Structure formats: structure tokens, C-alpha cells
Length: 259
Ligand SMILES: Nc1ncnc2c1ncn2[C@@H]1O[C@H](COP(=O)(O)OP(=O)(O)O)[C@@H](O)[C@H]1O
Ligand SMILES: CC(=O)N[C@@H](CCC(=O)OP(=O)(O)O)C(=O)O
Image 1 (cartoon, rainbow, N blue to C red):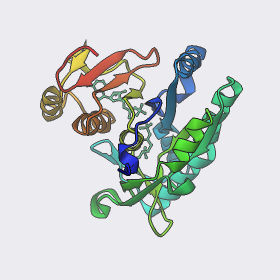
Image 2: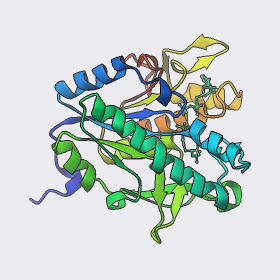
Image 3: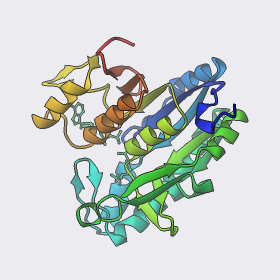
Image 4: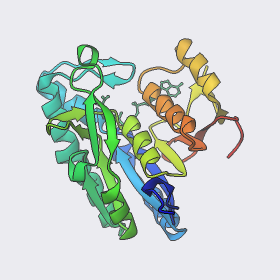
């Protein structure tokens, strides 16, 4: 029997780590030590990054206004050029450099590279030039991972016609995690997980999340994270973590069990 690509066993365990723009400037030596430990344990790592604060700064400097709905930036024609140049031109190479200088081989990619992820417009009337991922092409990721190189992926997607679209980095991270059949997804941000009424939440389930979005205890930039987490759980990734710099925080599972 010939095995389809999706049925082939993956030899290595894979983990996707998404680094939020909110914490990129504070990446510590201990984070890179942890990356090295995971690599030594045979885990193949993929990095996805955001860059919200850098984009905000540049938009403000150019006096381009932008708003955020449900954690997604409404991206005008003027803004998409800025988002693309900040993420691919500045944030991505700076992060790739940090990995390489720590002795961890890394290479930068966006949705354009080797057709990594192709997008259609999510909802132009509401969000402007924001993409919804249609397809992730994993060949280039497989090649890099088998050569012990960490892919560092920015969240600019390409349309079939080669136009750039802005995709929230949490969404990119979940779609990449699903496409490479990662065993876990770690969303690293500026706060150690979900807090509700000022109480840190160690273990949560989707039913809690739905309620807290309704009560607005979860809002803004946390919404794409919990959505990304629930997309992964639904598709069979057993747990997603939303964590701070120390890599501790909230574990989201279908059963609420400690994983
Ligand atoms: N229930 C919640 N618990 C913790 N943070 C929350 C919650 N709801 C909203 N947030 C906000 O989400 C922010 C993280 O999202 P964001 O700023 O987009 O980070 P990143 O750049 O890492 O993606 C937190 O700093 C906090 O202001
Ligand atoms: C559509 C959308 O919201 N795109 C995000 C992409 C960057 C991002 O997600 O950065 P963080 O990880 O810092 O949040 C934006 O323009 O801010």
C-alpha cells in the first residue's frame, strides 16, 4: 500500500513556539538555553513571531491610523506596506540574528518563501488587507528541520497573485503547528498566561474560554491566542500553552487536565 504524505510517521517530535511582539525585546539568555535543551532532547522547533508594538510605532511615526477589532489589526492599503516592511525587513532579521549569535542555526521566512502559506482576504470590508490562511506548504520546513535549522517565520502571507496580506501571528502559529503535526504549541507573550479577575489560570478548557470572551475577561490581543489554541485542540493537538518569558502560565486542554 502506498502511504499518502499525511500518513507518513514523523520521525521527530515538533514544537511550535510563537514569540509575541510584546516580549521580543526582552528575550533572555535563559530562553535560548531552553531552546538548546529542547533541541538536544531531539525536539524540532519552529518559531513564529509577531511585532505588534514595532508596527504601532512605525504607523504612528508615519501618522497612519489603525484600529484593532477582536485582536486583529484593521489594515489599510497604506498600512500593509508598513506591516510588511517592519515584519520582514526589521523584526524577522533581528530575531534570526539573535538565534544565530546564540549558536542556534536559524533562517527567516515569510508566507512568500517557497509558498510557505498562501492566503485569501479574511473579510475586506471589516479588516482590509488581513489574510486568512488557505494552505501551508511544509516542504521547506521539513528540509530545514532535517538540517537542524530553525525556521523563524513572520506573519506576512501571500495571495495567489503575490500580494502581501497581514495575518495575526497567533493564527499563523496555530496553522503552522497543525500543518507540521506539532505535538504542542507555546504562545509566549508579555504576561504569564490568562488571568481572570486578577487570578492566574493554570488549566483551562474551551468552555471557560467561550464564557470569558463573553464576559470580556478575555479581550484584545488575548482573543487571537485563545482562538488559535482552540483551533489546535479541535484538530487534535492535545495542549496549547499561553506563557510568559519564563515559559510558565496557562495550559489549555479539552479535559482541563494538567499536561
Ligand atoms: N484574560 C487575560 N489575561 C491576560 N492578558 C489578557 C487577558 N485579556 C486580554 N489580555 C491582554 O492580552 C495581552 C497579550 O496580547 P498582545 O499584546 O497581543 O501580545 P503579543 O504581542 O504577545 O501577541 C496582555 O498583555 C493583556 O493586556
Ligand atoms: C492581522 C493582525 O492583527 N496582524 C498583526 C501581526 C503582528 C502580530 O500578530 O504581532 P503580535 O504577536 O505582537 O500581536 C498586527 O498587525 O499587529
